[in-house]
Length: 230
Image (cartoon, rainbow, N blue to C red):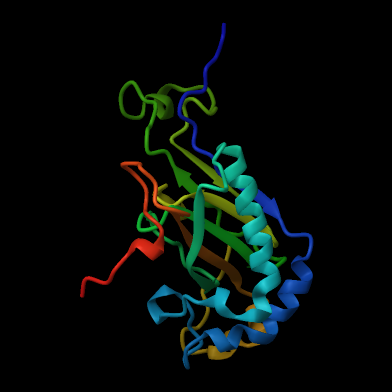
């Protein structure tokens, strides 16, 4: 038998060898990227962590990983310009992210800054957009095991210093762990000592544009070709 893996979806995993150095800097500066209540995420408009020059070493690592991700897709780096359009934090003890995607971008990444040692953390779960089912739940009800051909989702256990890259339109969510919900009136868990007991991840979205005007029907033309319409 000759097997052909048609239309797989590339998700790449990397581990930062300089994670402890970055984490030390992060713990000194994360409070600058929170609101007065200690919250930091997309909803609080804290989407510019990549603009903090103290975090440059991390984003250099992220961009290096991005190049390796694109290389696996055989994309010519001289054709496209990549832009990191936003980056934000998720700081929580117990909060499952519902099924969602980042479809307003092209590539998404997540980087795990802190995983408390006593946690069994939430898993990062990806959902197939093309379930290979002959009828719904055939493998759940009748399968003898899971493999790349019959699964509808795939999950990863997060580790500190781990970065994951995936198509932004890929639906995903966080599964269950053993985190204990904090007291919502106790803001001390956003102190340095408190944040060490929290799951902290940094996420970001990237888009492609062409580096120069191309005679192609798909893809974003260079920003230099854009004009404001309002």
